[in-house]
Image (cartoon, rainbow, N blue to C red):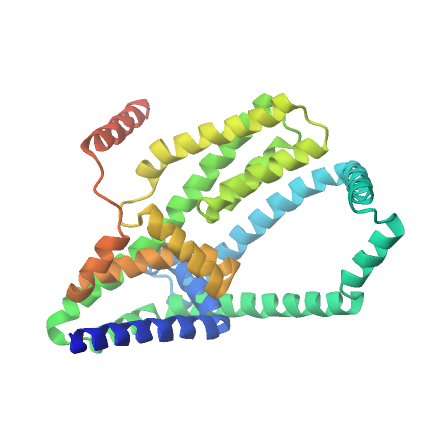
Length: 361
């Protein structure tokens, strides 16, 4: 009994040390993890170029250009749509001023605080402009340095991928080297599968939200469709956040109850199609982790690494599951994290959808 308790305490302490290490090493680990996941996305393309007798260095450089082009396209698309909203800024300002005036009147009627007293309280609570500028400059510097590091990791992880793989195989006992190679292959495949599946999902969400918002008459429907689609990067929370922003801005622009209700209906229909049709078709079973541990991973990711942790939580958890599935003592943990067995009726439904798509093609 004492030995068993001692073992449990050791495991808890080890877990605490692991999470402490992840937290304190976040400045090092976040760019490294993002760079590694992006590198696996371009791995098939890089391998294809090398098979065509293109030197490895040039293939990696072309992959880097492809990544930068992809980032540039997303920023340009969002920037173009945001520029279309500039004409609405004055209207939004006026609505915000009107809302602020109503709040001030409510506070005066309820707490008997004059507007001058309210302004004095707000000014005392607000940070100085000097501090705000200092924080902004610090954040920008940190973001730029992390971005440069991310690109550096992307380049060198692609270039030295075989070297790193051989190292991992060499430090593994000979009996388990074949299994280690399989684990490395599956982890890379899971990362690719997640990113490619996520990209397809975002594109289809753009189309569905764009059509839905346009039909019901939402102003700047394409922008809000792009916003809701991109926020799919954050499971569960992302789509709800995008739809809530759409509802709030539409309300500030004077949308009636029917339009606001229509936005919620579009969200519900898109979520139904995404959950029951798109995810089973696009996202592979290897990437699937059950809903409970999806939420746990997101919460832990936010606590440890903030927003980057939320974005990285799902692919890293999926990779951890693959490792657990191939190490005997850790298989129960892989089973716990993984999705439950899909019912036969659901499998048949997905197969019917696949057949319909193949017939149309």
